[in-house]
Length: 252
Image (cartoon, rainbow, N blue to C red):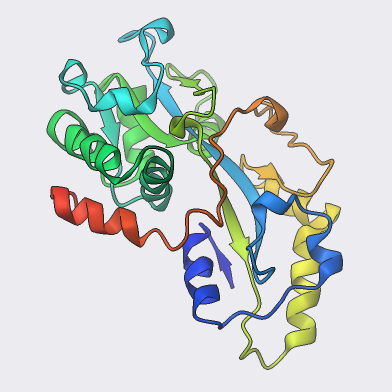
């Protein structure tokens, strides 16, 4: 299985449906980006960012924390995508860092003052076109749009100091215990973690290769310069906490 985010594989792992991945494959990946039981692995990484339109707001006027977007001063100025898996993981990260009450207040504030979009590219184009000052997205959407339109009006802002606004999430892969071809499944996972496999995948998307020592050639901010919160994909679990909260505040 190859998934856009890690929570589905965390859930399958909890149910005992995943096979252990060969140690030689996991050894080339950072331990923070593999399942706690060694039964799934991160393939590529991306970071949560704020895309903003400098014609509407200066970068110096952006909040120090993503939590601050939940205030009334951001009425109509921040967009978000509550159905996005990465947004839901960000909510879980806030629970892990600050508690459920803080996460509920954040979601409630965004619902009251923010603008809801159907998907991340629609949200990004809204900030690009000046319909909203800021949106909460993954970095790669902006780079994808840059390939279509060389001179973008929007820019990216990266949260620092371990703020939940700079959460790193990963695409993930695993082999099912029920696989009829377990040897081939392990070979595919090994290829995805290899230099060749990582380059094939990251050349088609503005994501970070997770293999140790590799860097993106897409002009991304260096992975080593990111300052994400100390919440790993394994810590995020299956993200059901976020779905429950979204339902509680009327976002889902």
